[in-house]
Length: 226
Image (spheres, one colour):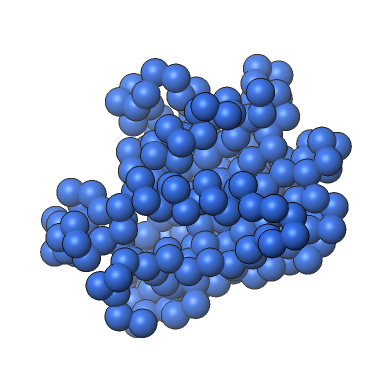
């Protein structure tokens, strides 16, 4: 059975993706805190990992290789949202956002690509956001990190597509529904993206024929304003 790794693992998209993939793959979720692991499905394998730390990433992927096999799917969802006045952003916070969002994707991709090449292919999905293509006034840290993630996705696709690795960048142009969406953004379910539906879209991307690979897909609810 093939192995999938999902970073930023927790309730919502990560959990829904894992549920959709369980029938076909062994799913390993990576979480920096690991605090949500016990709340999720007992069939999910979870590991504590700070994806912005090279040693942590190297250790966890060595563990995955030994215990679960070579990953042929990487979904990088890990990100930290920071919306603040530019002059109020500390250098430490700015770097932390970049490390989680982009540097973490680089480290995890380097960890899985050799195995994918040896296996004859695989898929890497990097989860972007509205800020990947349109940075707001208070998204200097988050937007620049997501822009960088998009550039990384393009570079990886151009280097590895012909070697069988499908690299996808998704632009999640909306808020994924959760109680937090209502509490923080004052949005109702009709205005948000459903995690289950988003997981289905991801599965469609992963299962695409090599003759019709999608590299970038923007996803939004019908109520969204372009």
